[in-house]
Amino acid sequence: MQQKILSLWAIAAALIILSIPDAYAVCPGLGLCCAKCGGNMPMNIPGGGVPENYEFRFKIQPSFMRMNGLRSAASNVDGNALLGMPVMAGKPTGKFMAVQQYMNMSMLNIALGYSFSDDFFAGVMGMYQDNRMSMSFNKVMTTMTGQSSYIMKSHGFADTMLMTKYRLYTDDPLIPTSEASLFVGASLPSGSISKRNTTHPLAVRRLELLPYGMQLGSGTVDPIFGLLYQGSKSPWWWGLDTTYTARWYDNSRNYQLGDLFKADAYLMNQLSYSFLWQAQVNVEWKGRIHG
Image 1 (cartoon, rainbow, N blue to C red):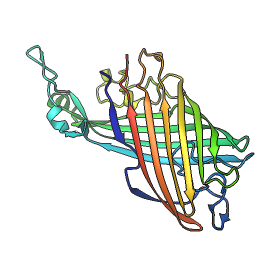
Image 2 (image 1 turned 30 degrees about the vertical axis):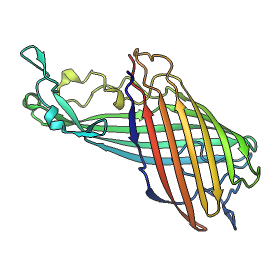
Image 3 (image 1 turned 60 degrees about the vertical axis):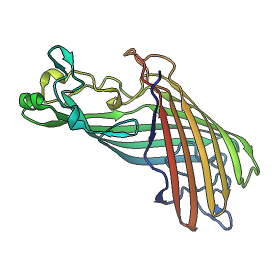
Image 4 (image 1 turned 135 degrees about the vertical axis):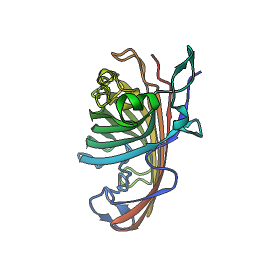
């Protein structure tokens, strides 16, 4: 049976975020320009908005995420209770030599796009990523290394995303209040899947591959398909973006990450000509790793 993992990511339900709109000028009665694209666009959701035709769009987005502790389904797990000897008297114990405490992910996304027509937009997005995961040792490892924990690290360029967006429907081509679009793209394997455990205190362990979550990419070309909807009634803006990333074959290390489904809902209100608030719900589903 395929494992299914449902998680709330970077921005939780009803979290209010104060942000400066991605816009150029003020459109009285319409909100922030460009009126066509619904200039009030969430910066963290790929595919938000349709820029004016023949317009370049450049975006730099730093982000930070911290994951604390361990969970099994909806329940917290005590990491200290999992520390021990993996095998006792020749039998597995369900214990581990080392257990995760937390993981920090710092990311910098840089995106460049161009709107070729009223309905078609294409872009590319690259990302630099720094991962740090704190690991606690059991008593045996603490004695061997002289320390009770260490920080597992990886950093470098992650996978690159190519994206296109084609507008399928709009109620007004110039000043839409309702529009739906098709999102088609691909994730290219520019991120390493060969990062090693170089910060381990034991030299013999430093050549081991890091776990899946600490690698920087999937190692495969992954197609992405999505449907996007945006609506507005100034000073309100809302939308729902859904994307599906397919993993169809094994990478060079003979495994493939699970398929990925994302759904992002947002609601924004323009408080003044230069200031808005937004609330988001971000849901992510990951399939099981194969291989």
